[in-house]
Length: 123
Picture 1 (cartoon, rainbow, N blue to C red):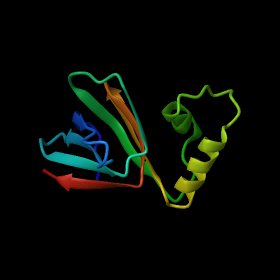
Picture 2 (spheres, rainbow, N blue to C red):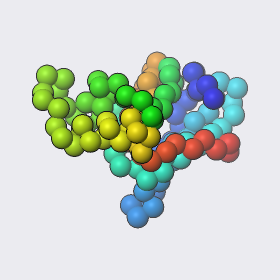
Picture 3 (cartoon, rainbow, N blue to C red):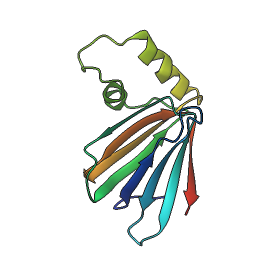
Picture 4 (spheres, helix red, strand yellow):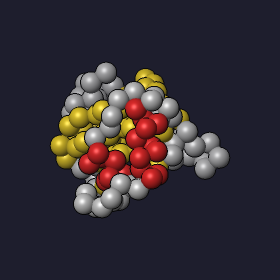
């Protein structure tokens, strides 16, 4: 599914024991979707505003994730040595045990999340 020019309209972390986050999106045609992030391990959101427009939505699993996105997720400076916990998570993404979600904005909210899998539901 393509979400270019969709809007991020909500982020629901739900109860801690559930560990499933829900991101609400409305595409350019006005159709609503929910991204379910199962077994959420970590999430960072930046600059949530009115009219959060998606430039690109990517998921990475089974391949090497972009290091700059992983560093941003874990709030690491690019020049720091790679901590063991980061190396471990990268390996889990490469082997398909974790999924990295990155919503890059053309305006507003950037979302980076690490979870078991991402499911897309029509609302």
